[in-house]
Image (tube, rainbow, N blue to C red; front, side):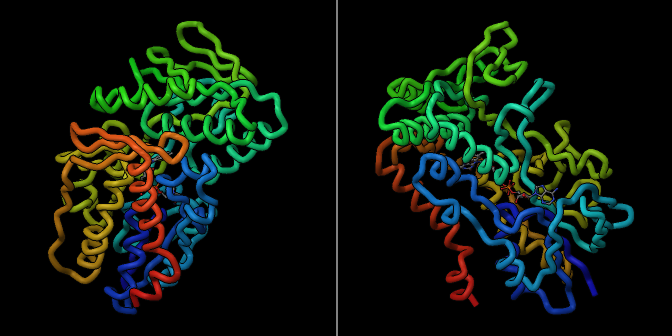
Length: 377
Ligand SMILES: Cc1cc2nc3c(=O)[nH]c(=O)nc-3n(C[C@H](O)[C@H](O)[C@H](O)COP(=O)(O)OP(=O)(O)OC[C@H]3O[C@@H](n4cnc5c(N)ncnc54)[C@H](O)[C@@H]3O)c2cc1C
């Protein structure tokens, strides 16, 4: 029996799980290694924080997808891959052998050497832990006495969460929201965006009294304060840590080739450069010849080609090249069912942009619902 092992239930693997059951014959065993039964869809997380969605609206049931793929589930995190023995070693001690391995474990938040982050901040990943942390912040805010919230990280996700937090806490408090600020070590928030799109976001932030502070990294998070490298200190009643993508620890000791930041190095077919029987997609992998930003949209786009390549690798057959266009649509919700969007150099905003995002996001989650799985049999 040939063995296919999937690590992580990320955006590409949910498609693989949906597609692969029908494509592989029963002599192939499929195993999914996942620490969670439900994948929280990050695109809808700001909407959950803002109170537009219940958590159930944003979740993809990995167990149902695994059933669809006739996959065994190992409820644990993969700690190490031993490519010489072709084994995955899990945190619960299980060892899972493979012939073909696919990894879609996302990234982790970059915390560097900043003191106190794990103890005093709500860190964005794992998303399930962030959800728990946010619910505690919300409960504290409801008791009153919360004057300020800091979001560390000035990328699109940090900014989007800052809007969501401000909107939710203002509505919860009947008008008097705590002051929300965004801190970034970059010169400005979303420095990679065209000036027009950034201008729109900054104007909306200023209208909501959301402060933005650039140019100095946070060096310490404590109970009730944040310290920056240039010695400025802010009082803060809650700190959300939403810094950019860092490589997952999994690759560090695995002997798989990585890029210079520690992400799995892959080719145009999503194969590891050092071990072709290992595939990687989404944030955790970098195509060295054709790198793309670490964004969910690329993990989603990878799904169909990854599924086809895993089937080809199991059965024998030609692999499909996956080199997505670097252009992509970004829609950033700005609190109250209003969004700013950009595509290439073009930017726009409005309630209609939020409704567009809402339709795309709900549509993605719905693709993996019980109803959609039953209909696609
Ligand atoms: C608030 C927020 C909003 C965002 N909005 C957007 C957006 O609108 N558009 C966009 O393009 N991008 C967005 N992003 C970025 C997007 O979240 C990531 O690029 C995307 O999640 C990457 O998908 P992935 O499949 O690589 O991994 P993930 O979606 O992170 O999934 C990885 C899975 O692997 C599991 N896992 C992790 N480690 C292990 C392990 N060791 N063993 C087994 N399983 C493991 C995790 O539990 C998780 O289920 C947003 C990010 C945030 C934080």
